[in-house]
Image: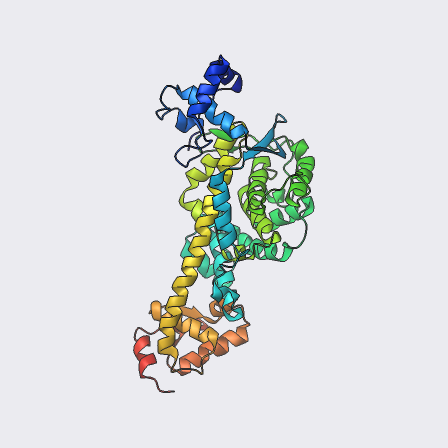
Length: 444
């Protein structure tokens, strides 16, 4: 990742339009703040052919003038005291509308998620996915499969990477509990403490702001500094301002809840108040904001899985904002698109699982004696022959007690729908390769 070139200063741009006629001519050729449906940064504009009769700088000047018409200033300020801002665009309005429809505020809610018998499984899946990928974004090296096994079996973490993932998992559960409370600096510290305990190079760094003698910046392994946060002495006041914004006390104009959540994500990351764990905390606070704003379907999605697939674009969205006059529109558009994709993935996943469930029910209709948990496990086993289930993992996935999980699995073993084996001192249960045939041949 590299730092985008900083655009020419406004003083230089204003000197380009030397006469009112030239100013009008530029605006007549640049009629929109976007180009070809994109909100371009100077880094892109300077390499593209400008509209006929304009230089790249004149084109950029025209774009800047159009963007100023839609500017909204927010309380977040950079280290020099200059406010951040964002533009209200048709492009963003369309994305927000799609998020509203898919995020639980309108009517397009997947039926299985409203089903109490299935809801817990979707929650556990999303919590695991977000815990793992958010930690991997910050350097956790554990594989997804090993991490999911650790969480499902409630095994103690064996290294720092696994500790990060477990912390994230516990924190995301805590965010759901905190969703109805207003954000406060104390809550921010609590979230950071949960998310970073026993995983920091500085042992006492969890749940406290960085100190003036702790020089923290965002850089790569080669030493390139991408961001230097505000001084530590400003953090108490800056956190107070951030919480006022999160709670809707500022600014005086309407800010769409999704926009507010994304800005809260950026704000925490920009201020970088902790010695480590800032990214994970920022994303956790985004989830708090969305659930606090009654976008309840966000309990079931993971945005970090998409951020992890394109970490350079994620980092670039931060840098474009900082290098172009504190314009948050870049970060907002990037995150809105990420959220839209995450919601689509959830809806697609639910539709796919619903289809698979219907297919499996054709085979399971001969077994009305199986409860919904056992049917879900057999549905999974049909697609994963040879898969091994433990009492602990079944209990964790279904959010049930050990005794109930044990009874579920022993019943399936007696019905010969699972094979019971000994592993060390415990029993495990294996999906037989001929499970479909066993289901089809079994009589009720």
